[in-house]
Image (tube, rainbow, N blue to C red):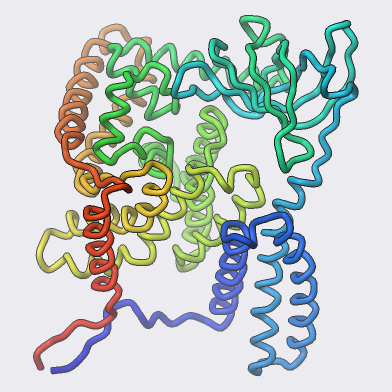
Length: 496
């Protein structure tokens, strides 16, 4: 009996490739520790790491002078870690030092004006939440003054608003604890529509979005509501029972715009463009379409992450470089921390990266273990679904108080249906001006919707595992642990 290593474990990588891979890993790893692990992610911890980063950089620079020795390699890792410390500590420090001010005493403020820095978000209990950049405050006597900062406005009856629109609110401001430039307010915008835009492009974005949403509304109410949720991220018209069914089926991630949606959309455009242009030009054109799509639906962290990885992967293919998906993943993490520092603690950001990290780290091993027993396509789908579930279950349990293991199977069944549904809806948007084709498209979309709805109802009836169920939670964690240990064993036994 002999031991045989798994295939693909000994790829030959150049010295420069090893250095860039190590640099990215050290940078992203240190950055993750400083951003997410207490007590490092506090303001005091960030200030400490801010100072330590300079000390590590200076020490690493001195050790690099020893050349290709152990000391030189240690200096290389110190410099990479210092960059991660610096970036990670700069986020909370910058957030705290961002000076918000009000030209009037805060206790006298009775109204304010600002521009939305993202689309309004529907609240679970009704109404909308608005995040805006403060520009002006006023009091009850009619006095006005300049102001700066970010306001989180909660409105129980306010209308939906678009990114970049100017709104006025009659409501007092209260300062958020632990921040010098963030405020909270409860009220509603004064007028029924935006009185101006931060830039004309924001108004153009709203105009195009409204037109496309109106085209999607030609579909039947149920199909149109689901397509608007899957393509535009607009869940206002989605039935509460349906969104609850998606959650109980373990497929709530399908309703949130993510890398899966971007892959479906970019895949269609890339497939069409490659029929008319050479491969590199088709990729660049599809990348431009992806950028326009993200501008229309908003800067969702998971979408931006997928777009960055799509761009880096396509660039590697264009210049005939080997694609290292893990290094691209780490690079996208660092870039998103720099581009969207305000979203690093959002659930969407964390779940997106955790799910993909699981697929990268253990997806191949799961696929290898399952491939002798099931078809290759099913093995690959199960590997992706199970690995993402393992890496996100702890965070989901902490946030929602329960997990839905049926989502491992439900995602595999629903993904092809969602794939066809989004592609059909995109083609429908192009041909809504052809009356002869509209009934055919509506009928086809309704049939796809019926298949999705029926599948969701079946899977949502499966039991969940709650955080307060000690026995169920113990069994569930033990099963995940056994699976994780089994798939991480790098050897298989073969009779000689």
